[in-house]
Image (cartoon, helix red, strand yellow):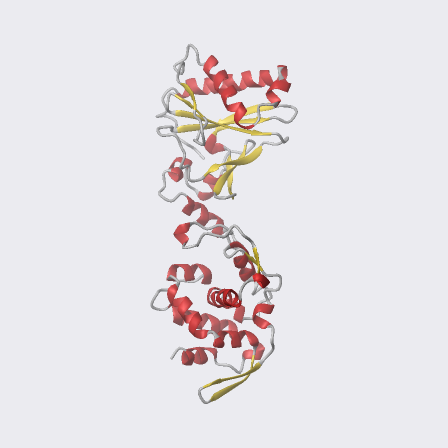
Length: 353
């Protein structure tokens, strides 16, 4: 990724200052390795600031090096324009988890940021590169954060992957959206993102992971109803038709269910009566559907067309979403031998009246 630096004031001088700082720090690492090895975490930031301050004497950056306290980003600022983010690892590698994609704590007016990375495992070494050149991926802890790789090759940054420069992304009203779109485009069938942003209508996840058997009967049925809405493939014969449901339960609902298949298939077949018509030997999954149809319809009506389109992997609208869902269920049901005698479209249409 190429970032224009023509408008950066004193950029060449700042590059020289950073180069001198890294050389000085690496000298310290060789000559005072025991002392430097103790400078993990926040202890390293004032140390780097002091080295930069000393080396800035006689340059345009003299008396302009500031250590930014608290949780601000970046850690050190020069002439209120350049920033240095300090990271450390005690492992013998050059990767770590970086800062939030949202950059909500970014210091005002800082335009160019550099990553100063200290590998405190023997042999101790310091490196520094432009921030945007070492961000390889986005990973998630409590929020999306960049993954730092100080050995990252040119053209391999997350910004190259999403085809959007760092400065464009960070100034975007919703910087998470392009990243989500990129990772979604790489999903294999049945996979899903375990973290979604609020714009996609996802509710906050509970901190507690629950076991299915500990849920109340009402909670279980509500989840089963929503599953039948979101995952129409449940009514088909695919070998992995319960895959997306299992992922959804864990990632969106924080519920672990060891036997997802049993939720819909346990209990065998029985006859089902609608009006004067008797449908014989109806598979259990369709009995669950028919018995809970009013609540399922209500779930469809209360769910936005946008969210349903995301789950169904096909476009729907608020006017057509119920009909579209019925068609999807019927298409999958046609593939089940035990349901060949059932006209699912007709049955669901009758139940809806």
